[in-house]
Length: 445
Image (cartoon, rainbow, N blue to C red; front, side):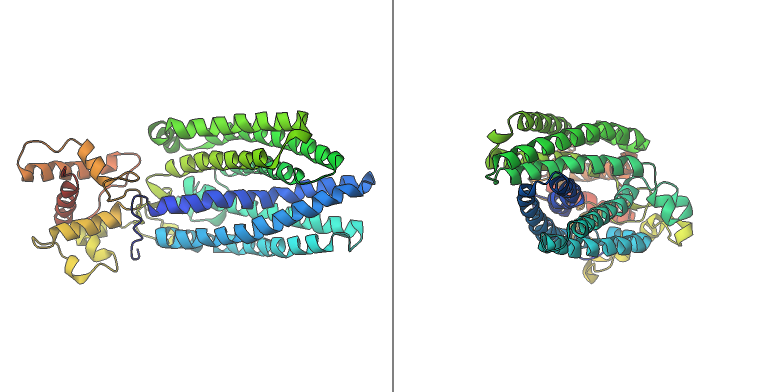
């Protein structure tokens, strides 16, 4: 664990989630756009419709700028945010899947070079060669999804990896294929929305109508198939995530997913029926709706991983909760409970490593930062604020101060019984310090 990234009123995890949700737009667009491009380009050559190449040029330029400039920057943002928000979590993934990421980066290089070659050679090389470039890009780009989904799904459902430590036992886990196929179909819905947006800027009405109608069919198929595969994905989830969906996932997020799918299908149906009536602003709003749906889906996916950042291995607060003998990794609960979290965690100031009467409040705050800050804020307002949480425990009674602290301590003892919170780890003195600090947060001003 490293110096803690404290984000007032939010959490480091929400900052990461915002960047990651945006990143899905350019990343999923990049994995699907070229399939649509190659299809349209093939139609242009076979049916002798060179006017369709105007769309190819515009759509490729959007892909180049949006996915490989803004998308690349947001990808860097994910790495930076993940590194400072949960360094041990990202380290655990790298140690287990460094060769997976290395393979993905090879295909990413194919993508980056491929889009420049494809865009700048349009009309400058023969038709077959240009189509081959497009196919290489399309397959290479989708392959990056094939690899990344294995790592993402591992974080929620690591399969047999906790017992074997084997790369493929974790990679091809029980949710891998359902998530891969779900993302693959939904990505065509995303590319269809962008294709219609590009078509609104084309003056040739025949081209605009053809692109809009074709994209609408792709969009409807992608959303419907993706929704069906989402149901399959939910069935492949382990028992704990199903329990957490019922406990944690608010109706707003569930409704957001359903409303997004419904609005997009209606939008694509209308666009297919009235292709020349679609303007740029409604097309952009459709993309905004997609962003809302992605946010709802990704937030639920993150919630159902609690209390872990890597399921059955590392808690969200970066404490290793389960030994992985095959990887020579030991669980840390016994060491922390014996020595204390303040002594085990690096970068704790010397004056706080040992709890005493003089530093109990400051020590308690440091413990809260280490063990609670990944999911809660310490502010009065914000995302899952600790002061409000403690007040809801109804500990603020007309009793002696010591009694209030004892009741909070009893609550900390029971944290392991909550399916979405890691157990408290530390010495009795540290538990008392944390309870004292939490009690101070709950004082009504």
